[in-house]
Image (cartoon, rainbow, N blue to C red; front, side, top):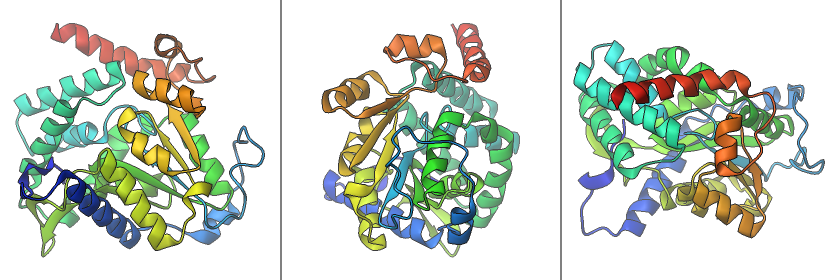
Length: 314
């Protein structure tokens, strides 16, 4: 699975590692593409985009790129995956406690904490080392049903569907393991996923990464590489994220969207007149100064659960 790239040689610059991670993610995504063009064209629209001319129907050089954590899904995919592995006795209770606290913090703060994400990926790397890729893929399918399916933001899912209905390709772009990201993309009917690529030999995880986690600049490199390979025009593409860490990716495309944005991204998006969408509860949306989207009251229960966990930990 994924861990931070401390295992890569120090002589390689951060930029070079980002490029390597991006190119590896793009190659993996193309190999595992779940696109079914006939199915995409046959879908019936269930959400009208705000701008009538966008997405442009039939534009095969346009695509959409969606961050995963807190953009498409509440919380972080790696934490949900950790819960599933604990249930299957891959690690001990003390590690589950750490996963649970990090997940509660992530949902309360609504932003990525580099140290928390590093810890989660280091844990995942040590847990899955020596396991077969096929085994983890099979388990990942079960974990999606158990912990992830009901945490998809309906509003963001509708935005992705608008692109699909227009006949465009839609990709997840995430620091989560590419195997986990691919499962989520397939379950949502998306084209595929760009994610962190863990090295495997003869189908067994080695405990090393290819490059570094697909985070920040590495995401932009992955999108750039995939666009070149798929003959996409980035000026006609869209990208969606909640985090200021993804400004490099958002800046690549002609249609950047800030979804459930953190404070830094909100400020940046407003300065550049980017589109903003917020699908969190009214309380959370008020905190960041953006009107809440209608119809998200049903999601409040998840936030309440995270708050309860936070109180117990205090």
